[in-house]
Amino acid sequence: MSAETYNKIRRILFCTANDRTKGFSVAYEWMEKTYRRQLDTQSYIGLMAELRFYEQHGKEFYLTVAGDMGEHADFAGMFGARPARFDVTTNINFKKFLDYEPFMGTGPSYKIALLDQGNFEVIDVLDLAFPRCNSCGSHLFPAIVLLDQNYNRHGESQWTNDQLLIDVCAGCEEYIERQRYTHSGLFSPQEHYDAFAGYDDDDLAEESTEQHVVSAYKYFRRQHSDYLMAVGSHSYIITEPKGGGHWAINFNFVNAAVSNEMPDEIECSHEI
View 1 (cartoon, rainbow, N blue to C red):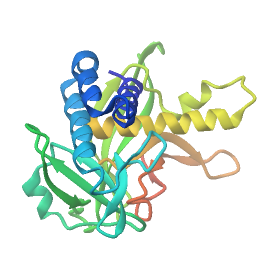
View 2 (cartoon, one colour):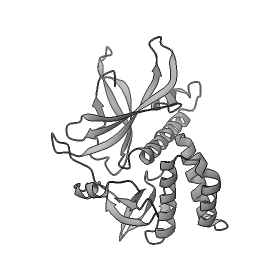
View 3 (tube, rainbow, N blue to C red):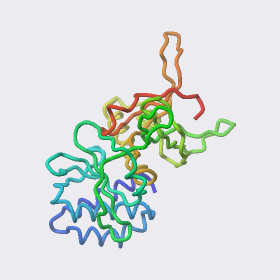
């Protein structure tokens, strides 16, 4: 299942739930009869949790659904007297999560709504938190890096792209590789932008690429890491007049919750 498919289904279900002539009952019916077979188990559980949280607590937290280019969370609303962003999850290791020291960014507070995977009832609403680096004590922020296409030793495209899940240390400005994924059609930001070559509208290319990055962010956050905070790419940075420079992971999108702490780039090798 692609990120585009996941986000399309999400938009349809929430538009249906918000439609006074249809509502949540129709949204749940469409989920079970039409969309469940198009979703993998993790995506189905995640979307059901979002719908139930929205239905049960929409008025309490003044929730509005965050879109693909919105607040970069599942919902925006109020927590007490303060503006807040809410991410919904069912698979946080609850005890380990509570041991983490909370980290809050500036602006609206960022909350994790933890729901029971069996009945989708809310267990708790928690502050966003991250583990600490063993070397410097700074926070470790999970990020996904969208890499360029894969080629074999003959230079032939394999029509796949790798994505690298990493933890970024805000203090050391280094990263720890956690896991590597492979997808067909999930291009790097530069490849997506280059697909608009020949068009005169640079704004269209930039807007589409930004949407592509955020779509990938939402997909990987739901699929692989509820803590995901950034999307990066791998490129050569020229810093000298004759072409000298270095390879780096650049961050194309950073969640506002950690934007003041996240480095703009991390130097790395040509091969990652």
